[in-house]
Length: 81
Length: 268
Image (spheres, chains in turn brown, red):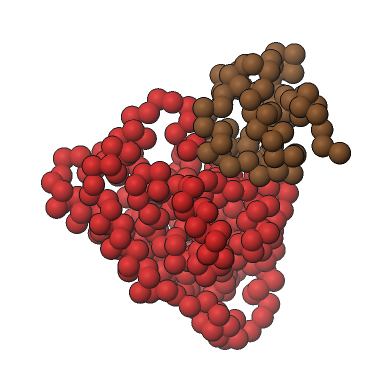
């Protein structure tokens, strides 16, 4: 059974927190993940790869154009589950 | 000297019959004039001692990945003072030099293995495609982003990709310019071994040791038999690239990339 949107969002935040060593409590769904995680585009691609592996989905990076917050990113992942 | 070399952008080391070529040009092994010059030097050394070599492993020492491709910043800035005619000559000259290096690796009389982690984009992907085998760890990500710049891959990517992938997937990758991960690359048959994070070089070394156990003449015969070099298409690719290059849309796209202060230059 596919996870709910809230579960997907939570898994995303946990993954981002663990990989980029930012405390989970400091991550909010509507945060700009580039700024909050302190990452550049190469690191964002790394995050994308980890998310694809975690959720077993394929996320075309052009669908992420303009996506900068965790919640919208989770919606994109959810749409592929 | 083939035994070892420490350059500004890459280094190599011969250990027994296995050469390891390590890329280490921050931020992500962008291929510009210095890298090209050192690759040419590497090829020259290989040619001089070719009988000593049974396998080549190409890998990156940088955490950011294998290679993000051509050094677009150097390309843009280097071409600025030139007339359109001089730019065209300059680009063609660079491509022909790259092709000579890549064609040598592609046809080398020993087994070549790319150990890929992180980003392998554009020219970096093309370098990996020259190798007989590709090992990728789970962080690897591949892309041909050239259409985003109004160009096509120019380092031999399309003819080499056609050897290994179905045409439908190639059309998807080129037309969308999207990147894809190692799972997809493995499922498509592009990556022969998919390994855990940080394990690509170890696995590639294991392959190199394995292939050196077998008769060299037989291995060379197999390679010549099953891995044809698409010479005409490689030349055609250079011509098409040069025709596209001298257009205002390309200059505008390069300028946008070079001058961007956004965090997202590698995203479409």
